[in-house]
Length: 306
Image (cartoon, rainbow, N blue to C red):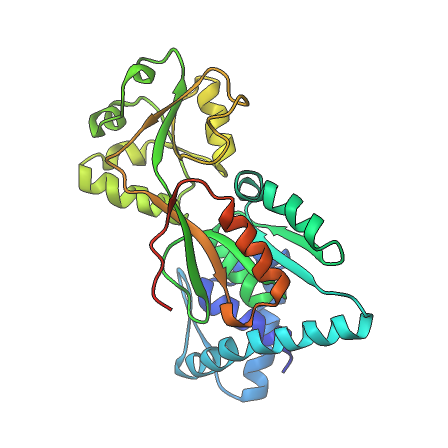
């Protein structure tokens, strides 16, 4: 039994899929399966139940998952500190998020952090979804994940930072550009909505609200994209109306010819940090998180007590 075996097993339990973890870790499904099989051989009992739509932990698997998830974070923190001591370095801050988030939320913080902490390395692992961020936190030696807020994973602490209102990005000559705000009927009547990818946390938020407003059909016929910048670019080209959060930088000179129409019928999107244990973060990681938070325009998110 190795630490990597336990990391992969916890990630599989969270994702409910061997293939999803293989994609996130850039390895084969067979390699992921071998980690689980090695644990099962050593323990002498099955840990996963296979179903047509994925896998779920057995009762024994749930016991191991709980123990492993609680212990991996502390072990990783200790190994990282020992490694820093052995190399005589001042440490590092490792962040996982999407490339769009780095551009819109972290650019100024990165510059300020490099000036204030020149001996600390700052590393980014870009992924395509909040689920992949959770898997990366569990399976790798990472400090921080910037995500769209959703249901907290076991062993992961969420720290909401800012609420972003939704806007409809359209060409400046589009008829909707002259409206003070977009109504549900405007969304339902759009010939082509550009939406977040299916199965993403932000798409789930939108689909739930669309269903409440009676415009679920519009969501079903929309074009899914991989990131917000792509959605805005497609809107600038006149290929549809992009439903996007009002990201920092969208209203600058970098988007001539683009109009952003508020969509008040959609509840704001919360974004922020996910960590294994906030209290266990090393000081440089806390400093970087604080710099990102202080540079976020918009409405501060309602943060849970504690």
